[in-house]
Image: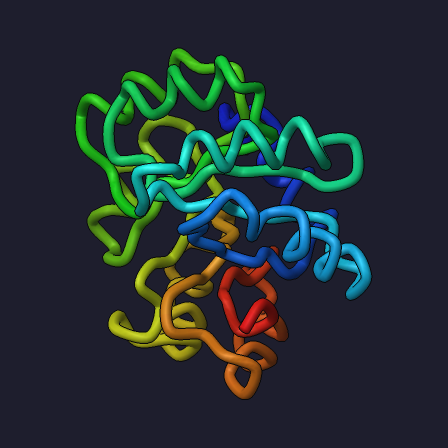
Length: 189
């Protein structure tokens, strides 16, 4: 199946672990990204959960955009997509989908991964030619066992599970054939 997601699989394949980070202060950016780089991690998803979120994305892109893939997460409105594209992020992540988000993602040129949790959501998103999804929140929707079942139902689909994953559960996800990368915050705590 051809993906219409602007090479999200290429980005995820290059980054088997994606730290999901919420910044509350711009001074946190440089030390955290330096820590990730020292750990051999060259990717970050910055969530839109604070008032400074887009400022943090801009600063991270300006300071470290040549060393680390910078994504923006918690995309819940089409305006988020426009702002993320203006900044020049490497990828975008949404926790779920709406008709408006589907249209905006289809029109964008930045790699994106929409969030799904149920078979109906996977089917709906697949009807747009998409084949790579964030499975969120993983721990509340059956975890690795659910993804094993989805592998049988949707053999063409790859997932990046996030939500409630920690250092002790990460491996159960990463060993699945239909998991392309795993997102979480355990490595930044």
